Amino acid sequence: MRSAVILAGGRARRLGEEKALLEFDGKPLICWTAEKLYQIVDEIVIVAQNRTHAERLEETISNFLNSAPIVEPEMRIKPQAAPEVAFTWDQVAGFGPVAGLLAGMEKARGNLVFATGCDLPFLNPEVIERLFELANEESYDAAVPVRPNGYFEPLHSVYRREKMLSACERALERSERGIFFPLQEIAVKRIPVAELRPIDPDLLSFFNLNTREDLGKARKLWPGCK
Image (tube, rainbow, N blue to C red; front, side):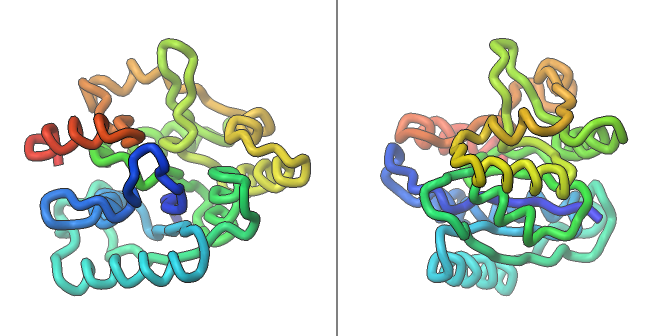
């Protein structure tokens, strides 16, 4: 079983808007993200800020499911029925993505889990599928893309759930807020992003929204890349 965890609880101070609810082509970004993940996983876990936020996101997703067709079976990379969608929220305030990953890994049921933020409009299902394949090697606990400058993409990675769950628990026990701390606790298969260019030549799957400028660029790219 495969799961996906979407971290949707970020405050987005630089952007000035809630990322999950940003509208692209008539739908909130969180809905587009879920639609991409429908193609390759059995279960989606959305991690919110708190219970109230989770209820609001659940209503948004439910309205989308009830009003728009999900990906047709023949379009899915991994043939299956529509995946389940579950909601949870950070149990520890102030620990950012580490607390979000912990909550998501606790809720997820799959052995392998793709972890992502809600701010990547151009997620590429084929890239994610490739990361699942690479993470399935028994000697590793994660498949993590790495930029030429050595920068990891921990929120565009596939993890063995139990290993990452334990690593996040240790991070919180030690009051470590950095998302890279858990990566030091597990066996990571580093995937140079250049290896993914045959699937995604411009590496748009990794394009995330941090600023108003990013949002403007994403909306210009959107019609040809959605």
